[in-house]
Length: 434
Image (cartoon, rainbow, N blue to C red):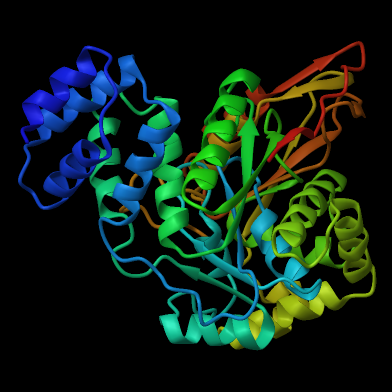
């Protein structure tokens, strides 16, 4: 079998066999194929596409290219949730304890962030001494004991995906929906959960800008799950404006705690209830998502979701007192208000611009080597549709030092459009694909 023949076959629009896909991935991971041949293959894939079977085969080949995590010692049906990324996407910090408190085992592998703000692991490290580097045994024991653990990806998960993504990033082949779907699902499958709920974002702050592309990606990932015997559900949700009000690591932890107290932003709360009810159904805790939503609302109101967060923090070595005293989280030295320059209705808050403004303050990474400032970020005062008067506070910048401050303020102001008429309301959840 030769890579040349496989590249030529796909260039001509023909279907690759399972064996051909395995050969390419195994040989590339082992270092036996040069980058230029895999680049040519990726470009052929970009133009010719892949069918569902090819995409599932590619996903499994990448998933099996390194370590896979066996979670079978965990009792019950293990569920995980993955977001395709956004601005102010605090859902895991709320969902993991909330769903666990409602009775489903949550075994969540998360990553660090590259871009607007930190990933879930960066956010959790804003909690003093919180250990995100759990051994496999500790991870499994925590889920069996308290039904939840959130840890960084350990071992050598899906190394083929890492190599291939780095290559796609410099060869203009990132935005191939089959390759995106395989990349996401290969890591989720290697991480070992039985059921996967995917939060596929749509809008300016998301990877997928259009509803049509997001739906295509969601349907493809659900089909991959079906083809590899993993229960998978996708929720299409809005990311045209930031989710919630906080953008920044410690600020998002604070917002998650407030949400578990029943005091969080309406959109963040609603999305967590939607995603969580799907997780409960996949776990077999409930047979109907409406029953699941009622159960989650109950643990939100009676405080058991908040108690579960405390339990999770303690079990992973962190200071659980932070839940009762949010001042224990890292805080920025200064707050700088950004005010409206005109009166009217907020018709747009471009999520990507808000995220980039937060990154300029130090809340995110431009390169993998950058260090995150856990205390900085942005807290919005309003959402799209709210009425403001000239001089009203639109947001507060939480700042350490003056570097990039003026540029970040200008970037944030450009995110806002204020008009004379109230805008049409956008849906928070567009569709659930199962």
